[in-house]
Amino acid sequence: MNQRTPTLLYIDDDGALARLVDRGLTRRGYRVVHAASGEEGLERIRRACAQSNVDGVIDVVALDQYMPGLDGLETLEQIMAIPGSPPVVFVTASQDSSIAVTALKAGAADYLVKDVTGDFIPLLHVAAEGALRQAELQRAREEAEAEIHASRDRYAALAAEREMLLREVNHRVGNSLQIIASLLHLQASSAAQDEVKAALTNAMGRVAAVAQVHRRLYTSQDLKSVVLNQYLDSLLEDLRRSAEGNRMSRLTLKAEPIEIDPDRAVAVGIIVNELVMNAVKYAYPDRAGPIHVELHGHGEDVLLSITDNGVGDNVKVDPRSTGMGQRIVAAMASKLDAVVERDPAHSGTRIVLKFARMPAAPGRTSTAAAS
Image 1 (cartoon, rainbow, N blue to C red):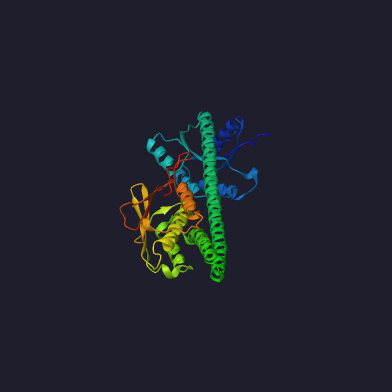
Image 2 (spheres, helix red, strand yellow):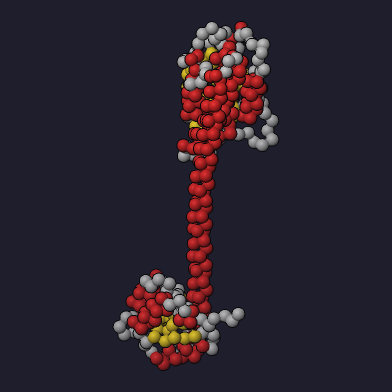
């Protein structure tokens, strides 16, 4: 494809010099258009900028300083105010360097001193070429910046859409899990055998622990973390409303607002559910008693404890127990890469878990040990 011939608008009231510029630049591959005054030049530029026809485009302007009516500096100022105006090479017969500074500050791409014989035309050609290259670089920069802004806008829109979809997914999952927990509660309420009732109640608590995380994520401003004190507060309230709720009137929580990722929050919730239910079953065989859940930060780690003042080591384990709760606690502790210990100094039972606020690096060996 042939390259389009660039058009230079030469604004100068000297017609003879304009003809010299026309001949000199035409030989160098330019199409030259002449305007005899600043007003005429401005009108041509406005028409060119308003047209979509490529043939009417003005690529670069050479502007004389001294002209009747609008002088060069006044014309330059108005050219710069036209949207999409071409680059301007300011031309003057004056040797005063302050004029050059003024023109460049006003927006001229280049500046040169002319003579009446046309010897400056090669310099004008060089200046016009430089102005065109500069304008092309500026257009490329603006297009790149526009593409960057458009990409950012697209990314922001996709991120907002993704967040909305994640919220909807968490909402639906949370609702579905809550329905399952409610069905288990109904089934437990109607079960005739105590072991069946206990198994269904335990299953309900485990499902509710997961459901609470999804409900938290649906209402949270941050989909990447769960605030543990709020989550545990809701979880314990669910436990109080469960089939064993009449024995949990003294279930308390003391927790700091520690944030962790949703997957690990689920593990914490299931551990709390299992240990609280275990305390309800075995710590106070003949009565209800206090059960305390505490969560505190300890440097880069988190300490979680579940404490009762019950029978402690004198607990009588039901021979029909499957040990499912202990296996679940061990599995969730492994997921947290947590250390699980029983406090030997406590008269009742106090289970303490220590785990890092941030997930362990991939490949790290778990130090979790079920008590």
